[in-house]
Image (cartoon, rainbow, N blue to C red):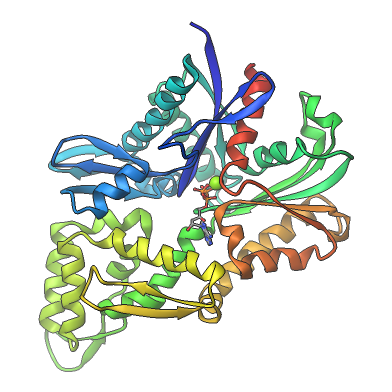
Amino acid sequence: MNKTAIGVDFGTSNSTAAFIDGTTPVLVPLEDGKFDMPSTVFFDFEDGQRKYGRGAIEAYVGDTEGRFMRALKSILGTSLEDENTYINGTKVAFVDIIAGFIRSIRLKAEEFCGSEIDTVVAGRPVHFIDDDGGADRKAEQTLERIFRAAGFRNVAFQYEPIAAALDYERAVRTEEIALIADLGGGTSDFSVVRISPAGRNRADRGNDILSTGGVRVGGTDLDRLTSLDKVMPELGLNSRLNRDFGDGLITIPRHVFVSLSTWQKIHLLYDKAVMREVKDYLRLSESPHLIERLSHVLHERLGHRLALAVEAAKIDLTDAPATEIDLEAVERGLRVGIDRAGFDDIIGRETRAIQQAMRTAIGDAGLDPARISTIFLTGGTTAIPAVRQALLDIVPDATVVDGDRFGSVGIGLALEAGRRFG
Ligand SMILES: Nc1ncnc2c1ncn2[C@@H]1O[C@H](COP(=O)(O)OP(=O)(O)OP(=O)(O)O)[C@@H](O)[C@H]1O
Ligand SMILES: [Mg+2]
């Protein structure tokens, strides 16, 4: 049986896999003919199976009894990385959950290619964690362990924005300096690269990579901030509690609301200690009707529904000037309006952080922004008008090229896999 190497872009929000057919990179249809698959897991308590991708979202939203998880890449490099969680009474390590997801991608690719696949070039963000080299190295080691557990014997890594550069390079006719921006769900990554038709054939690109950089800010952070600003106050955030002993009121603690707005932490709330705490809030609250909503969300495990509703509204705002966040699942008729100006305000600090990371990458390349001839955009978060504009403002004279928003990194990783292992 012939063996094939693939590229796997395990993303915070979405994943792809691709391989080289002859000389052409081909994305694997991971789910119903679609190339990108949401990075989701659903432990179905009714049939005992694990489901992934859109199938996992459908099962969860369809009220199947079980546990849903997304954005698990964000635990890499954090203290959660070595932790376990209890699923229907069974202890499961987070790394094994991710390995199961990646194994499902490997098996789909094997089925599609008709050959055994044991070699991978996996994408990684330039920094999993900001300003912590130790945590960053540990995150990569953990990801390597995960890929091995998923059945890959040879595991190599490439920076996600370099992979995107390789995809872009297929199309260029003359040498140029390009800024590659890959803004995803968890991180925003940049590379400044000398791109040329001849470069495609060079094995060692070290001299052509002028800089790489990035920041741990992505679309899931924008979801969190939007949720904290617009949704969580409807569930009691900022409301007040009577003191348990003595007079006076205190503002309700934030931590439950922060976790409920943070994709990778939502499932941690479905825990007896948290339920007890919320029961206390209910007893002491000045606004019990809000805390009742919170309690309902936790009891019915609606946390990811809220996150999905917030994300959907965010995506609406890319094309529409205003929209509503649908909270029907929490309470009949409950909706919260949001317009683009309000959203741009909510994400202002993060937009500036992404912009600053791009400036730093250009500076690290030793270049003036005017030297950048092309800016290549990929990743879902580059669709947001304010974020996109913040990047284009730095290089106003550069040609703007939109890559395949969800496929560029996977295609570039396949090109790298072909070069290293083909
Ligand atoms: N049209 C859109 N407008 C705004 N945001 C969008 C749009 N489409 C997708 N997104 C957001 O883009 C993010 C996902 O992008 P992408 O699939 O590139 O990330 P990823 O590769 O999974 O993450 P990372 O590379 O950071 O690990 C999500 O936060 C999603 O909500
Ligand atoms: Mg990505």
